[in-house]
Length: 145
Image (tube, rainbow, N blue to C red; front, side, top):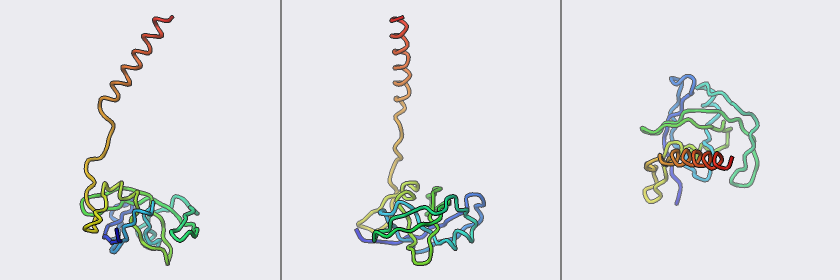
């Protein structure tokens, strides 16, 4: 598929005016999390919620990093997600969970992100079926008693 980069904006969810524009963020569907420079996250006031989270790197090595929450915006799309406070030497990545939250997918032929289409949801008939089953079960229990 190859690799490509994108630009996005990251915001502090508690103080949205505190934000940073990020350029050349590597789109990496093999990474679960989005990795942003710790200096950037600290500068805009993103709090780390977890310390010492363990990660397995692509080369098999293990590292621990802080993790917090941030709003990620890409064009008209946005989501809130966990982000890793990347240290010097770490790649800056837009990970799979953020892509899912943004409802974007990779177009490998054009090497860009595109809308993933309608978001799957439960069928509206499912709650009615569950309610009908409960009524039916109550009727059976009443007849048995």
